[in-house]
Amino acid sequence: MQSGTGIERLWTVLDLVKWGTDYFTGKDVDSPRLTIELMLCNVLSCGRVQLYSTFERPLSKAELATLRSFVQRRVAGEPLQYITGEGPFFGHVFHVTPSVLIPRPETELIADHALRYCRGHRDTRALDIGTGSGCIAISVAVHAADSQWTAVDVSQAAADVARGNAERLGVADRVEVRVMDFLTELPEGQFDIVTMNPPYIPVAEIDAVDPVVRDFEPRGALTDGADGLTFHRRLAEVLAGAPFLTERGMVLVEVMAGQADVVEAIYGSIGGKTTVVADLAGIPRMVTWQPS
Ligand code: GLN
Image (tube, rainbow, N blue to C red; front, side, top):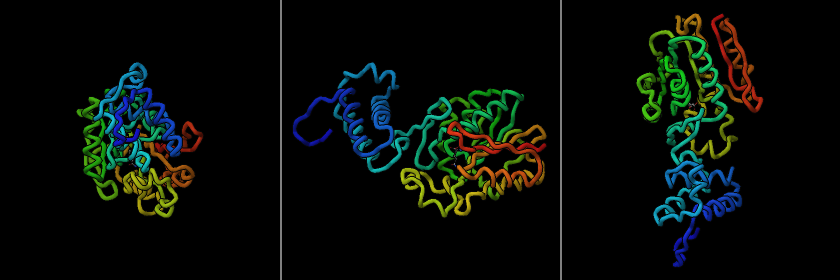
């Protein structure tokens, strides 16, 4: 897909799917075919099914120029979701910017369990700490119409993204997004559900993280600048203090691979009941805590 050759050939969707798949394969980009297809979907404002039915459609010059810049950015290492501005989570598309962590499939475990809780209880009051794109709170709110969420994040830019997602997915009236530093402040009231996917990578390990993550995703969403456990210690301390969780309440937190035992011990040290749940890859990924 060279430009400036003087010969303007016509590129159809199918040509570009083939070309992009080969090009990304040669550049060691993950999921080469999916990557070029999602880029094309974004450029052409269509879904993947629609893309398959428009294989013969040629791209305009402007569309090609956009696609070319997407390809260059991806090859330079930028995550696809920041390029297209979209990331899937729990069956919905979330808008993302470099101010928020890209939603991960393993985090759907938290959303799934929070939703199960909401279906077993009425009128849940819920808190999502470090909401980022808002993916956890918003996903559950979409499916549990009687749940009311407070979603907090220390970053104003992240809160703006989360608010936009709540509006787009029709739950802005039930997901209140607030800028708040959970390490020093607390939302008022009591909650039935508390979810948290904190910045849990120990700062000493950040250099070893995949560059596509390390060099592009917000540092403050990845690491606490310490041993990765700061937010868990803080939440455990809050739970041990004045009533923050209702008696029927439940805490669901994500942990890094290899962190489950130490995180379970942190919450276990304040009494109550803990469990560890593995993700689809079999990695212990979520710790839950209940008062008794
Ligand atoms: N809660 C958001 C998510 O799960 C952001 C988490 C974070 O930034 N550490 O994707």
